[in-house]
Length: 231
Image 1 (cartoon, rainbow, N blue to C red):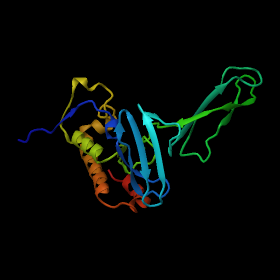
Image 2: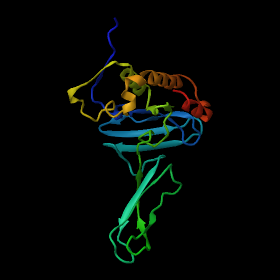
Image 3: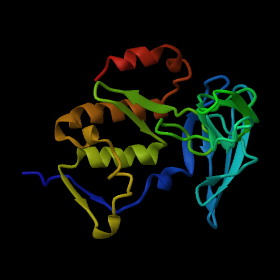
Image 4: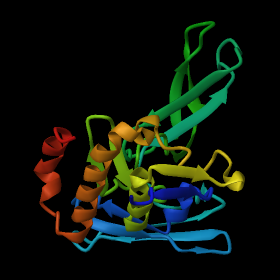
């Protein structure tokens, strides 16, 4: 009898795989890579599209995005002030703009709940990472996405894919005492951890791996709806 496949969660987080992210250009959808090597707690993330020539870059420290860096994902704006008419405290703005807005607003009108009049609130804008899978450095769309009937499967790169494959295939799963509850494995959705979904996930991971090995420049245009029916 073959020995059961074994996987040990050593506690590493998703950021272990953030040094190289497989993405698509937000302008022409051509596959590319965000390279973000880590040095002394800092990351310099860069993307250059070989199709349309788009360049993007940013820097981060301790997971915080640089204020001057590029960001192509959703943006959250927030701010507060007293009402300019009755003095009610506070008029608050907390809004997410999906996609990269052409012009991020500097002020947003807010209606006072007391006097029902509007005042302009100065706002600050920051990248909004939310729960949608995307490149964490520049907000670019991921290349490795695979819809299944149970949910969306995604990965940053080949190393991330391999770790997911080893976890899914394992019938014996263990966690080191030092792993805690913040590891990449512990944060996976519950449906990914169910043994009855093993075959479904392994097939989906194989399709994602094949996408990296081949040229899928044209597949993204019409392949998404077809993949949605797989499972």
